[in-house]
Length: 418
Image 1 (cartoon, helix red, strand yellow):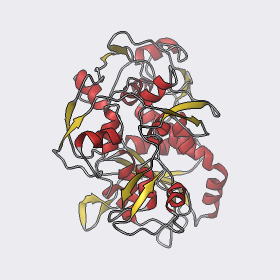
Image 2: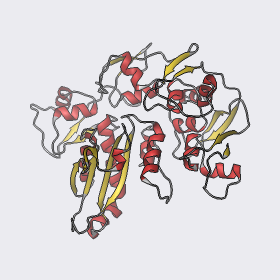
Image 3: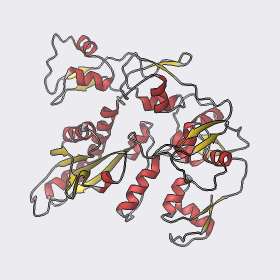
Image 4: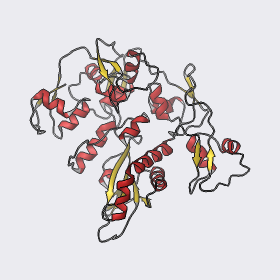
């Protein structure tokens, strides 16, 4: 799932990469630390179910979604898992008995404004069910990815679509960023009646290999576009795009002309911290690094307070360069985060015209103004994983640099950060 999301160009983080036991608090903390606390942060919590005596013999997949969200994502994921051959049960919400206004599951209750779903792929205590999961889990993973693509309008390269139960021309047109009339014309339909299993041709307005070139400060929406995709392409944010175009939701239509806000910093400006902000999120929004933001504001730690006014410095020129060899699973976004820089800086430094990378490709990366290691003072609640993730490095590198033989930390301990 991680690999497939990266192929789509979606920033993705795993809460753990090994056999590690996490408390509920640590799980949700890692979720919120990954990309902040906003609805456009999607949380996929993957599980195998257990029936127990109360549901003896139960089998099939379920998807649970949060009380704060609608059912679209959960429904799309479950339908696609069913299309992949698994028995499906239901998609639903569950309330906390002691407080029905709250979610039952901590992954939803304690992840604030994010968009979480719990995917239960089958029952481990049902032999035939778990056998299907063992044999087909890659298909089920692909089904989850398809559900995400459908929900967020990521589309795909295919120009055909097979009608499923519950489909309508309007729903399919909306999914692929086209119109019901265009689908009718492409398929010589004389009515809006569809049949399950019917294969439809989905018209394209542009060829995927030759997307339209931005003209001035406007952009014409194409099939498969989303606000996130357009914002990432032009080095801006979803909120800035919506503000510049007076948008009240994230829906786009093919052919829609968007105004692209100018995000180039001509000098210092200010920014007021909002709920869910982090230094990394603000730095990335303004095309600068975390260290530049901290230096401009005299910050010695990473803590922010809502309402705090930050000075946003003009982006500094790169002082020196190192090189980085692209590995499997890398993206410009992940490399930029690793080296505390921005995607646009990497593209400029390497004369890249798109975000495509190839394994083994050698990239120039900024080394910053100093070759010395920075330091970090351990605070309550810290872990090596949390600190490594914050600074775009690994637990093993921090341990090696600091001569640590285990993962234990103490409050006040000063660590060298590679």
